[in-house]
Image 1 (cartoon, rainbow, N blue to C red):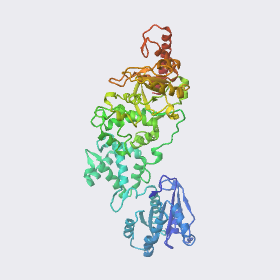
Image 2 (cartoon, rainbow, N blue to C red):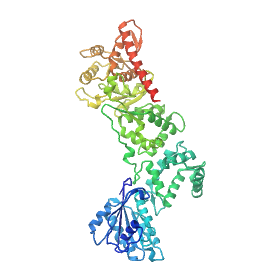
Image 3 (cartoon, rainbow, N blue to C red):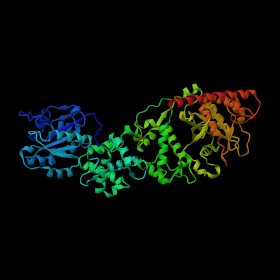
Length: 639
C-alpha cells in the first residue's frame, strides 16, 4: 500500500462524522478562538498560514456536510485529504459505534490505493464526567490507520489546538510505518533503516556508538551536540530498561533501537522521523529517489571520475572494513561492508577486473579501481551506493561532491593534453589474437596461471593504475568483442581515449583484421591508435596482407607495432604507452618519431645520434613539462 509522502508543502485535513457531533463547531472554534452561537451546516474551507502552525506548514481544513454533499463527493474529498479526523460525540454512544461500522470502513474503501492516516476525535467532553479513550484504544488495534485519538470540547476550547496539531503530525510524522501497536515494537522496515543508520554512524566499526560518535550523530540530525549530563542520562535510561543496550560505556544497536521505540511510545515520532529523513528515507521507509540520484547533467564529450573527496571516502571505507588490516577485504568483510546496501556493488568475478591478493581478495588498489570503473561507466549506480554507504552524512553537500565531471574531449584536443585521470582504451582484435589475455595481464595475470574458460564472457573490462610522467592515472581496458570485420562497431565501441589493435604474430591471417578495423573506423579519427604485436614469445610469421605490420604503421604514421607477451613476467610499458597516448592525444604523431628510430631502446631514452629524432624528443618533452607545470600550478592555486 502506498503512503502519501510527507515531503509536502501543505497539509489537508478533512473532518467527517455523523450529524450533530460538532465537526463545524470544532473548525470555527479553532479559527475564532470562541464557541460560535450560530453554526452553519458546513464551514468553508479554511487555510491556516505556515507561520502559525507548529510544523511551519500551511494547513487546509475541510468540513463535510451530509446535507450538502453526496457520497461520491465525500469519497473524492477523502482521496484528496492527507489526514482524516473522524469525529464522534462522547455523550452519544451511537456516534462512537458508527466510527467502526460506517466511517472507518468508508475511509478504507475510498482510500484503498493510498493509506490516509486517521485521528479519532471525541467532542463534547464538557457534557460528561467520563472518558471514551479505553474504548477507542480497542478500535486503534483493529484499524492500524488510526494514528491517535483525543477528546476535546468545541464549547470550552479544550484540546482544540492539540487536535489539529495531532492531525498535522499524523501526516508529517506517521506512526504506522514505524511502530506495530499490538506488538509494541518497531516495524521491520524501521528496524532495517535504523540498523543502516547505526552502521554508518559507527565510524570505528566496533558495534558500539561511543560518546564521540553519538555527538556526531546528534549534530548531524539535530544541529547540536548532546550535553554531557544529557548523554549520561540517556545511557542510564537504556541501561535500566535494556541491559544489552550498553557496552563499553557506549550504546549498542539493541540500545539504539530501544531508544527509538521509546521515542515513539512517548509520542515523539518526530525525533525518529528527523533521523530517518536525514538519512534519505521517505514515509514508506524507502530511500527517496532524490537522495539516491541527485540531478546532474553530463555534457556530450565529458566523462565522470572520482573527486578527491570521493577517493578519500572510498579509501576510508576500505580501511574501516579491513578489520584484520591485511590490506585486502575478505568475503566476510565485503559482506559486512555492503550489508546496508541492496546487494554488493560488484559480483563474485571481480578478480577478472581488478587486482587481488593471493587469496583472490580485493586489495585497496582493486577496491578503488572498482569505484573508478563504476563512476565512469554507471554514474547513477555509483551515486546510489555512495548514498547507501553514508557519504551524504560525511559531507554538507550530497554525493555529487564525490565525483567530478571532466572537461569536453574537444578542449583536451585543443590544449593538446587531457585533464582527465581516467582513460578508456578499447582493445580490438580477431579471435584467438590474445586480446582478452592482454587485458587480464594488465591486472597481473599471466597465461600460465589463467584458465582458458575464464577468458570468455563478462566482465569485458580491466582497470588498474599506471604512472604517466609521475602522476597516477587509471586506465580502463575494454575488450571489444567483434567476430568479423563485416560486423559493424557501435559508436560506443569506437569512441575512446586510445585504441589498441591486437594481432597474433604467429598467425599469418591475424593482422589483416586489425588493419581493416583501423582503416574502417580510426584512419580519419583523432583517436590515438597503438597496434600490439601479441604472443611475441612465439615465432613471428609473415602476415598475409598487402603490407607488413611495420610498413602499415609507417604508411599511416602510427607507432611501430609494440611487441607483447602475456607469458611469464608481464612488461607494463605497453600500458604506460597507451595511457600516455590518451593523456596527450595530439602528440601521438610525435611519439611516432620516437619509435621509428632504431636507436631508441624505450620511450624517452635516446641512444643514437640522429639530430632529427633528438629534436622531436625535446619538443615532446618540453610540451609535456609545460603541461605538468600548468597542472601543478593549478593544484597549488586550489590548495
